[in-house]
Every structure is written in C-alpha cells, then in structure tokens.
Image (tube, rainbow, N blue to C red; front, side, top):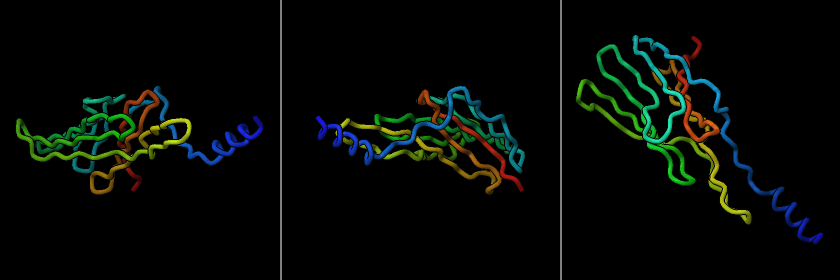
Length: 147
C-alpha cells in the first residue's frame, strides 16, 4: 500500500497540469468599438458552434463576419472569417485558436482548453482577443491599444 501511495504521489507531482478556461461565464463581451477608419466592430456573447461571433462593418459597405466552426473532441476551436460586399464573398479563411496540449497519462486523457488567442487589426491599433468561457463557448473582446 505504501508503494502505491508513493507511486501515486510521484505521478501526480510530475503530471502536466492543463490550464483551465480563464473567463467566468458571467464575464461580459466587449462593447462595440470604432476603428481609425470609422469601421465598427461588434461582438456576440457566448459564441458556440456555427454561431456568428463578431462583425466589422466597414465604411465602404463591406462586412467581415467571424464564425465559430466549433471544435472536435480534444481539438482547438476554429474560427472562419468571411468578408462580403452585398451578396458577393470577397475573401474567407479559417484560423485555429491557441490550445493546450492533450495529455494522456495513467488517469486517462485530459483535453485541455483553448487559450487566449490575440489578433491584431486596424493597422495594429486594435486587438481582438478570443477566450473560452468555462461553459465551452467563446468570448470575443475588441480592445483599442493606447496611443
């Protein structure tokens, strides 16, 4: 029995600890902000699979919409960015969010969480930070950088 307790203590001491989601479910999304060119960025709270998560409405009539493609078991979320003008899609791409490594040990698989992922917009004047709420949905925050 003593050998088992020692082995268990050793395994727990050296087992990697995965970070948990850092955002409480009650934390608010960001308010709309205006970019230097007059574009308006808006977020949608608690973004889940296939949800519209954020939009940027540009003065020239184009709109960038960010959707969540969701995440497979133990995989990071993928965001899909689509720029449209009227009914025409001008550009689209997908971006994978930062994610903890999957840990497999004697106690099973620990999937981890998405980690805060930051993107720079408006020529470096605005950051978009995407975090994971504890309920598994995503939180989008547009924040202007101090000049």
